[in-house]
Image (cartoon, rainbow, N blue to C red):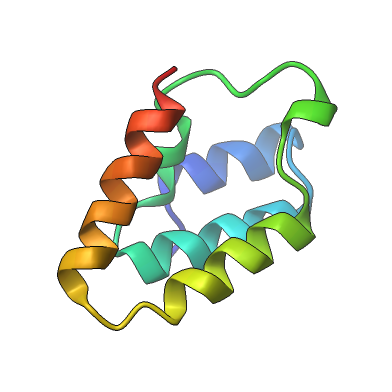
Length: 84
């Protein structure tokens, strides 16, 4: 099933297919909808957005965390930093 935010992005073509796949993977691992990533406007400059290698590294590191409480704290930390 496609998340509404993902559908919107596919329609307006503002994100590449690779970016959509990466966000979909991250959202699935975090058990959150992709739309949670779009509560705020994305940065204007592509230099400020993470590239595929950075996203893959973050996801790989997150998957190695075995403790569910630690994973929850990591998600909260990411949310806190993303609100700045």
